[in-house]
Image 1 (tube, rainbow, N blue to C red):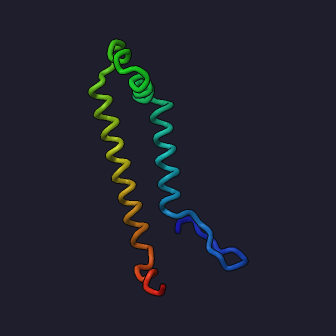
Image 2: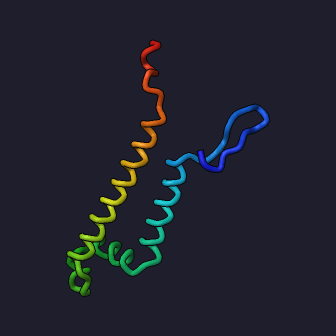
Image 3: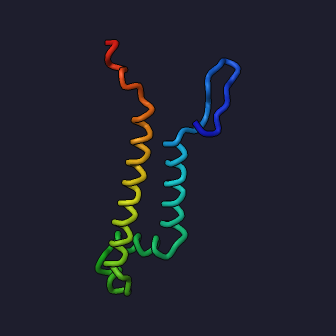
Length: 96
């Protein structure tokens, strides 16, 4: 765990990798969608693709960016899932 500390009751508190990754991904996506021109173009394309095309937006380039970004997010999710699975006790159901 990152940023961990032990309380008086002996329990360890802290931020784990999935929580930190969630905060980073939500912040990055929010910044891209709300503060950049590509984010505004994605909103326009999602509202009406034909109107966005008539306004001169490169629909193909935006779709490549969106699919590439989703691929990156899938890769991040796979890394977090791999890290989480490696920390789980493999013999947990054996004692049942």
